[in-house]
Image 1: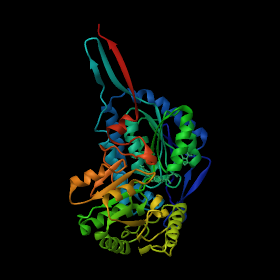
Image 2: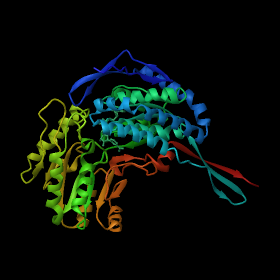
Image 3: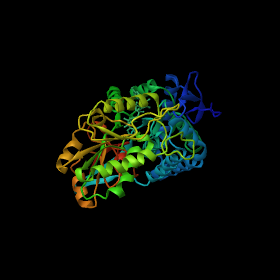
Image 4: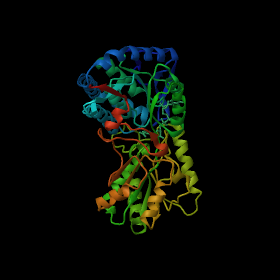
Length: 472
Ligand code: NAD
């Protein structure tokens, strides 16, 4: 068991709870640490502390808040070597990638505070001056998933706090520990009550969404939970953003250089064991390039080093939890029942403790398979054939999801033309996976509601107000 102790951060102070739960290391399937389980009374006190902190925090200028968030970012970066192994042990990802996530979070915290929503004069016609100004909303309830606990929380913290709000942040019960350590950084760098971190089960999430003292919900997680969050937030008409699941298509055009793009496609599908909302989840390839692409991907899959993230050579860790492992194995079993399908790499779990699945490539997949229609959120990639690119776009769009997509071609402008026809919040040309501070991120259709990052993300943490002033 870990020798570290983990505490909530409420009003700038460490707190434990009467109740606790085990955190499982997915590489061993064994508990490795205990996490305090916040009570409703602790949530009430965290919300009250955030409410008290809101007054002085909202009166600070953007520049003052930027300075405080920069201190927080530097404090986080200074503890990468300590927080990294905790993130690897609770989440499963290789240590280098865990450290990259924490470093990336520190970077994004700063980069996202390099913009400002300025008041505008909409009209000044001699009779009236009409101003548009922005107010922070109040207390934000932030709820994060288990795949990228730190960087996804950082996105919420950056714009939520920078806009002048205060926050209660809840990590997933599968990966709460690194986030609680991030709360310790907040104790040292931010005024008490501005950022409170509380760990607990799904009940704690539901209490947050219905809490009358919370004004805004920022949720990242699955579509079914997102729907529950929206329904619950309706009780007090909280402002809500939902960053939900995806089933991202990658469309390969006939002129693509298969040898050059295969490693990028592979990374886009298998990074973090495929547990990325915006991973490549289905590939559409033209007949001419189909076999070389399947062969190239399968070769990479067969040689990809899968193991415990604490071992230095590991390139891909386990699935994060038992439920996700079972779900992905069930999709693999369902795939095997389709007669014409070829599994050209993987297709099985690893014979060792922990939730390991071999990187799997599925050739001759068809549109109606569950693996193609559902979000697999794991290391299993279906490759589909197409003959007509308009038909590939139609099939790519035939989904309730619409998070991200990509088009792969040497002709960038033709790629952009096709990108504009795809129903997704972000479409890359010759790239897949990644977020940038100034690029608004979010989903079409059931992949979400609203945007995080960029000016649209910052604006979503503020309430616009119009002031109409007579001039004569
Ligand atoms: P999940 O929906 O099971 O849980 C997400 C969070 O919601 C957890 O903190 C959980 O405790 C909490 N929660 C559970 N029930 C709740 C309730 N009734 N009310 C409030 N909160 C509740 O999601 P997950 O399995 O942790 O994450 C995987 C999913 O997240 C995938 O579908 C993935 O695509 C999606 N995701 C989306 C993005 C994005 O930016 N669009 C990013 C990462 C992950």
